Image (cartoon, rainbow, N blue to C red; front, side, top):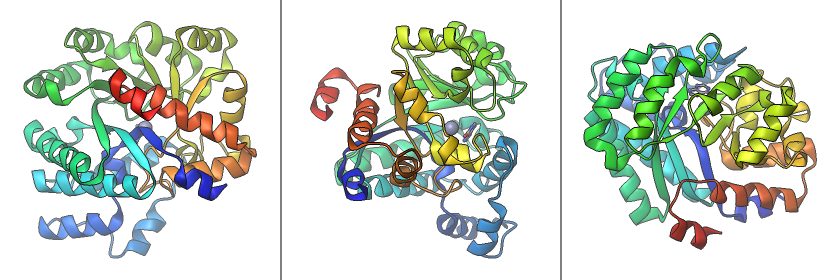
Length: 324
Ligand code: HPA
Ligand code: ZN
């Protein structure tokens, strides 16, 4: 089964580039930028990665991202992730990045996007991996701040495919971002959002009806509402599920209790993703391995999950045909 998973061509649709920041690279970049980080060793870092809920993780994730300063830093971060994709037979990836995590610290939007896009171009040339970008708004900040980010993105519009919504979900419902999503759609960005990770089914409804999202990041709590399940099925909207993330952030207590199998049985279009692989104990293949073992998934189900990852990606139809 592991070999089957390894050899299976896959796409990753839910990945935060800042969450792919492995401790080794973090040390290296902190050193060259003369930034002190609060850890002395990789072991200390690993010990700190012990989370009880989403906010525990976010506090550390933003702190670590603060060592990224130059376009070269963003290049190295992204290219390192793309190399790991190549090693796992991930052929296509849709990378989320959080501009506000960096612009808030005085790093320009251009620095962030130029480093990331240069790595993506090299990933295509040298590693044969296609990629596109999802610019994510931080939901703990205001809608006004998100509008500022949208404005900053416009000169680079040709490099960005979609907009997303991440960070602290509870207390920051999708409806808070109604106007900026409307404006983003007008600019041609495809809307997606994290919903139903810690938030209730109501958050998923809002993301669908108010933000008009075309894909749901996580969506676990959609299962609380049977009308919502029918709606997601009717609209043929996919869920980007992240098993090891859910375990690490205690969204599920054990992978054996993970709703993924139930989602598949309901006919929902599910994909498997790593979310923040450097923090949650595993890359995309490890997510496939562990959820397969926990839920006793068949090869046919694994194949379906990988197929969904291409089918529900945002690549153009010609390329999609090639992958499918
Ligand atoms: N959830 C919400 N926001 C995030 C995450 C996540 O798993 N990773 C990075 N930002
Ligand atoms: Zn996420």
